[in-house]
Length: 413
Image (cartoon, rainbow, N blue to C red; front, side):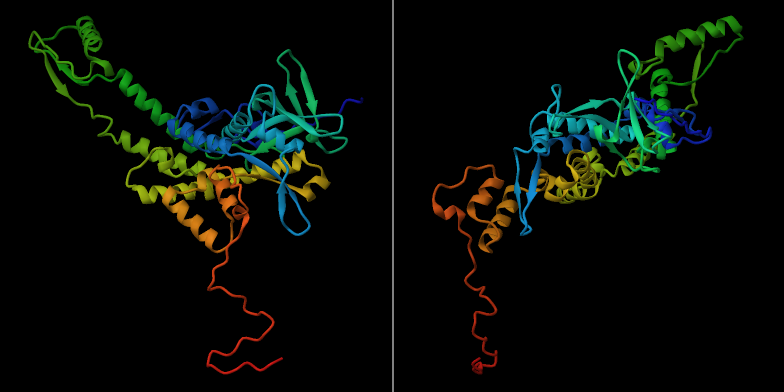
């Protein structure tokens, strides 16, 4: 096989491009003076909380493959190879839950996630083997104009995979090839948050509980002053020594001159960073534990908002990618993949059962379909499959024209 010629993109020194994201999610400097790396960003509790909320919720949802019927209805196909990947184990190291969770988290932090598609002799997908995004580079083959994926092997060297061999989930892309991470798009916001956390940690690590001036009634010399400063810092400095009572001798006086982190609006800055980063991931604050100003009704409504505006875009990415990468062109016309979101959409028991009653009385569901929603076995009698129709709801036309409302008789046809 003839070796393909690889072209190299020129990168700007001032701003990262999507090609920079083929590495560790980026190592971008910020005006705050810190590098915005994936590892530093994940040290922020709000980033970990947002990534966990989205990835764990996506991972817990069961996926189903449906065959589309000519009449517009559909039937589930649990024995299809694609369905088995997401109802069982996609590889020998992970369950489907772990796979979806990990790939979603990779994409949230690095903009891309990768997994090799293993197929059998009939071309059916039988496994998805994930790669860490740091191990994968995207290259363009000059002779064909196509893109390929070079995977770095633990033993050294690389292995090339074609697009049809790679399951590639990506965040919003600028070139349709490589996803761009949110860390790269908003690096100043992440950099400011990282710098704020570092400043707070440094304050607690190095700040004395009584920072200020020590004054002596006499001149004690440079060496004695240095020794006094060192002894005082060792005795009273550090968060674990907060509240220690100082005993001053030989006429020493203490003068408080510093302000606390709260007085310097440190806590307010950290709170602002939390809100800013939550907006970047589109996660409502109560979902990540920020309940200030919230109540039960608003939190319940926010849960539905989280599903509609945060989770659904990611589930849609997964569903369309599964169909695009794992089904053939004919398969995409005949099948569709969907995650079951009933686990997060169902309300409390009273609300749920009231909705069931309305659906049952109006003939939308029968008893066995409702029992299935509650993970119950179907009824064994024939009545479990019967649909009800309200007595006060009649067809508008039954072969005979309906008389007018004024009491007149309808003319025979």
